[in-house]
Length: 111
Image (cartoon, rainbow, N blue to C red; front, side, top):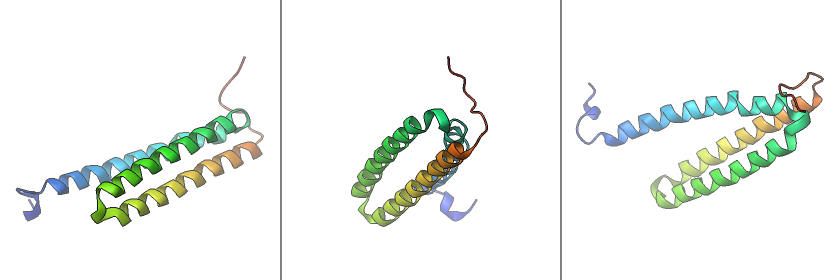
């Protein structure tokens, strides 16, 4: 094992888990919700985009709290949050635009 995997390497384990977890979260987000927005934009775009906005506000609050708590890494925390927030917003906006422009039926049926 590498030398830095010994005693006191707990922060390496945390960094490893955070990195693995964020990859899983980003892939799950990109594969599910923007796709749903595109597929069902004709019926649900306003509601879906409302919840994107709420989610981005919630995420922003958490990023600001983390940046306040961890002053040493404040720049990286804010940069990561802002970059991912912009990417997420652009993904959803693309899904909405593409869905509204599509003549394909959505995946949901309504009574």
